[in-house]
Amino acid sequence: MMAAAKGDMRSFEALVVRHQTPLLNFFRRSGVYTDAEDLVQQTFVRLYRYRERYSPRAKFTTFLYLLARQVRVDEVRKRIRAKVLRERLMADEGVEEPVSTEAPYDGLADDLQAALCKLSNAHREVVVLGVLQELPYAEVAEITGVPVGTVKSRMFHALKALRRILGDERIDK
Image 1 (spheres, rainbow, N blue to C red):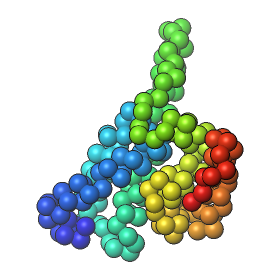
Image 2: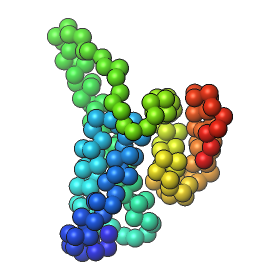
Image 3: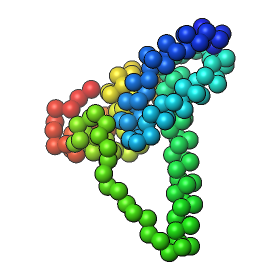
Image 4: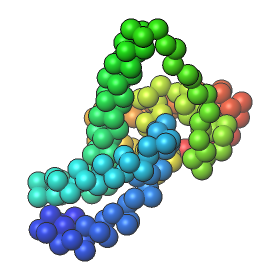
């Protein structure tokens, strides 16, 4: 990343190649299905824009997942605004919006993906980052902006909820 920050495009390309699949998995496991590739691209665009401001105070992946998390938050906010606008327009016209209950396949077992979707955002986030992305608790804490103890607590409760949802006592970190 330091070479990319200085303008070395080959280094930046190497970062993209190395991290695009883990980022795609992060978004899909976070509940983003159809637009996961777009969010990965937005994350790398944002990384490119911030490349000159990058300072190696933490691991590069921490910085990257912080960007990815913010891209996801921005996308959720954008969708909420669009949904409110769409609902207002449809209410004015008296039209009902069709509802789709089908979730595209993202590589996780259907029952696990469904169980993840039942968790709160905070619990799903620590499971996705800590278990599925295999990041250490300290890095998850830095990305989510909460203390390590809170990450551990959320992980404990999230895994307990997943065991209950799946009816399987074998789920452990």
